[in-house]
Image: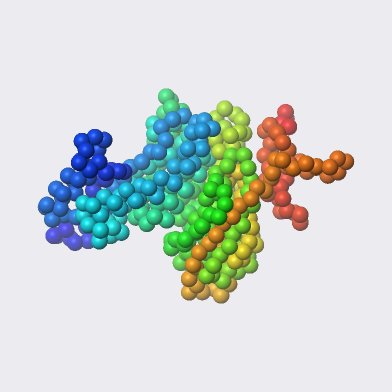
Length: 366
């Protein structure tokens, strides 16, 4: 093929780890596949990987493991680099690209595929691959259909109607708002908060934050080096909405609907053009990220040029709604500082004092 058209790229199916000379697991696949292709004068242009990190039903522990799974991309990348170096040569590390041509959060169309948690996983999985230089990734899949045994659906849209699942909304948000040139980020506290950054074609810095805690809101303090940030930017927020499959509002990440900038389940055709919400930014600023919520922030260059070279970003987080506050009575006790509740939710409010307010109160909620 390449003799006819040198621009054709050849991919080879790879394994997530190397068996070497041991006849176990993947049974010499990488060793023999690469040596056989090289014997024919072919060096793969990219390696193909498929992953489904979790194969168990939803539970508190399983949810936590699923949201930690994006961290495995670093190990997977290192394994592939090591195999390229070993079987092809150290000079090819970085030249041979990696493609995640099939992935999803769970195996066997489990119920997680219907939830906001699937969207949280997918956003972080994609951004971890971008951070580690992967060439691309394909989610499985656009439309599939409900699995009556596992109570899930691999489709990003319902099969019978163009009704998007929560995971769909990650794609128009990232493709239309997040930059392409990744920037190094450092989390200085609290690993449950994940942060990614990239510069876009207009010279803006884009930041994507994920709060993986299902119970705790956090204030994230952001410090930017090597960039002259403007004082006002835009933000877009994805957060869970509605109820879980069992009709409750907890665990919140298991809710089966989504709110995008305050609009619950917006029309799929409008999401690419969703306008951002004005928000204060700068080289050092703070932003509140609610439990199980994703926030994308666009920070303009103060000089309105694309010449800035961002050297680093640091993120630190602290609890924004602590559960162990002691109040003096008589005195003021705000409703959002509850120690327990049923049915209600809190949201960031826009009044002068900031903070949160309580909403989504239905009959019987407390």
